Image 1: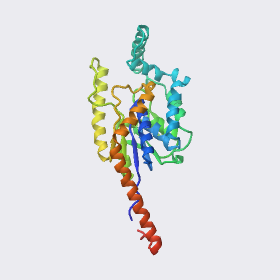
Image 2 (image 1 turned 135 degrees about the vertical axis):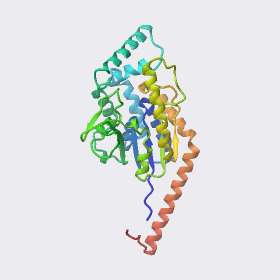
Image 3 (image 1 turned 90 degrees about the vertical axis):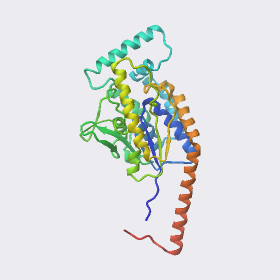
Image 4 (image 1 turned 90 degrees about the horizontal axis):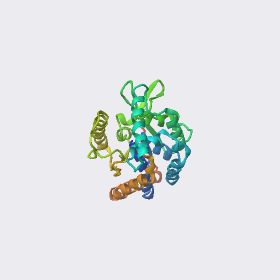
Amino acid sequence: MRKPRKIGLALGGGGARGLAHIGVIKVLEREKIRPDVIVGTSIGSIVGGAFASGMKINDLEKRAESFLESDLYQSSELKAIGDAESGAEQRLSKRIQAYFMTKFRLTQALYRPSILQIDEIQEFVNFFIPDIQIEETIIPFRAVATDLRSGESVVLKKGSLRRSILASSAVPGALPPVEINGRQLSDGGIICNVPVQHLFEEGAQPIIAIAVDRDIALCSELQTAVDIYVRAGEIQGFHLEKYSLENADIVIRPQISGIHWTDFSRSRELISIGETAAINTLPEIQRLAKRIYKWGALEGLKRSAKRFFGVTPRRG
């Protein structure tokens, strides 16, 4: 007997750029494509976890806007880094301050496991995610993390939703690893930035993937060892991501250009970019919707025929 078809949605990592996921999901909802299972990495786990928990996508968009106006964000280290990296016009005194703070953070990183404190990011996760277990989400949800000791990709299906998402979002260097069941877990994007493979292994079909990392072609001048190190990571991640996307039926890639991963201040722009990317992919999405509808109608006819003729499926 054929297994029921499950629509899978894979939400990739990319820091603030992941707010584009919200815009994409808005379009999918308008096209009446609702995922049966969601798997997210890093910021994708935050957006996916909130949506899977039952938050309406318009409410999630409003929550993102209110977060930017909150004291929690305005006084955060995350905002300070985003301001320094955004490239926005600043007074000379602000630019000097940002320069020395960047050097200070890099120096701090030599003596502790991360630049940012875990408590601050925990508050960020708590702002968007309810205090429930993963098993309690309305849409089945998984968060992807990386076990730093074994080097394995870990799919979190049980336990605290907030803590699982925190582990999935623990960007190496920026945040310390999160311990769950004796494992030291960090950002899932180390191995699997767009978790298509994990949906494929669960039998999800079709799979829609949203990739929000920066385009490999975008590269500023490489002046320091840090610039070169970061660029090497981008190249490596791009090719890993390209390989993982091969199992997706539809890949949506919002054009987020040079937006820094900490620049949450551009949330409205990012959500709009995501919406535009999905609209540009509408012909593919609509073809997929027709396939899903036809398949659902056919399965309904088969079930009706079985009831009418008294045919019951064989048990294996």
